[in-house]
Length: 99
Image (cartoon, rainbow, N blue to C red; front, side, top):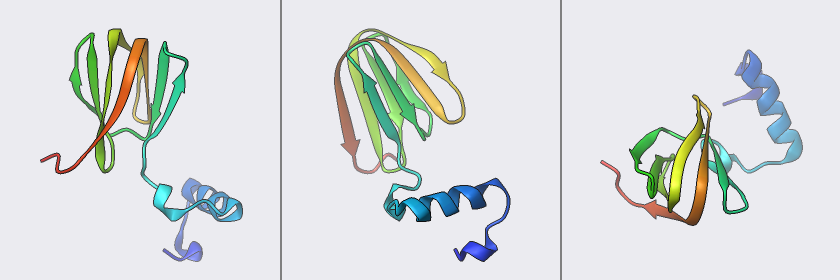
């Protein structure tokens, strides 16, 4: 989309991305930030697919992200972010058809 056609708050975001020369491929991708083994933040998720205390599956744009561990629970979930706390043993990106 041409920058002169972008309106509202997204215009500033678009300008910042281009000023920082951030790849267009990152748009819509989930960003996973591990904070030690006790917390993880997922930005840009597409919802929870499965929730158990030893495994949580999170939908992303082109994959499912599997978090395994012990005592896993959602500390925060809103439209943009999820925070999972507990003992995180592994993170796996599962690619393929999610239908």
